[in-house]
Amino acid sequence: MENRQSKTALVTGGNRGIGYAIAQGLLAKGYQVIITARSLDKAKQAGEKLQGNVIPIELDVRSDRSIEEAVENLNKKIDRLDVLINNAGIYPDEGVNILTIDRELLNLTFNTNTFGAIQMVQALLPLLEKSQDARVINISSGYGEINGLSANVPSYCLSKLALNGATIMLADALESKGIVVNSMCPGWVKTDMGGASAPRTPEQGADTAIWLATEASRDKTGKFWRDRSIISY
Image 1 (cartoon, rainbow, N blue to C red):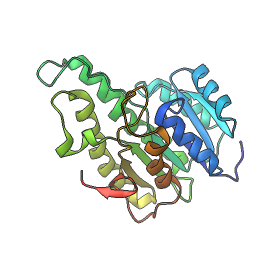
Image 2: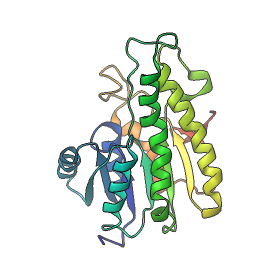
Image 3: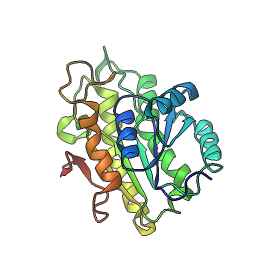
Image 4: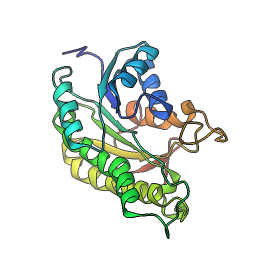
């Protein structure tokens, strides 16, 4: 087991963008951080760049087998998990709208953005239950708000709307276990997904997630946050 004293956080898709900024912020607060990427090489490269207490793991949240293998690997390295940040996601809606999108693309986006997060909680629950301060943060979007839905961003909007719903249900199911579950909107962030025109830096987008993981009161669960404040679903 590695470094049992510090708290441990896992960030899916932590090799770039908002996930990388979240990992960086957690490392600065003394956390051991597990970075996952679909490629082990990419996870290792991010870990080397961060130069902290990082465990790189290969993980594709779309694959139950990949999740199982990752958890099996993690059980050899950690004795508990304090924070799970479901950050991995895709934004594949260019050139389609709600009238033209096909089932295959909807399935791909939901499998990544929604079902992957649910499966991660299920798979890591035994490790989360061993923490005295377990927290789950789902990285959502303003596009997942009821009033933020866009017919021109169909699979992404619907997947984040469903992720917000899953957050409410997970919070309810895990409250008796003392596990806090929240979702957050990072805003429009300058990343590969957000594009160069976005007004926010990855660090600004990561702030609320880091705060929810480390400092936020545990009496708020099942909520949707932006800039450290609760917003409506």
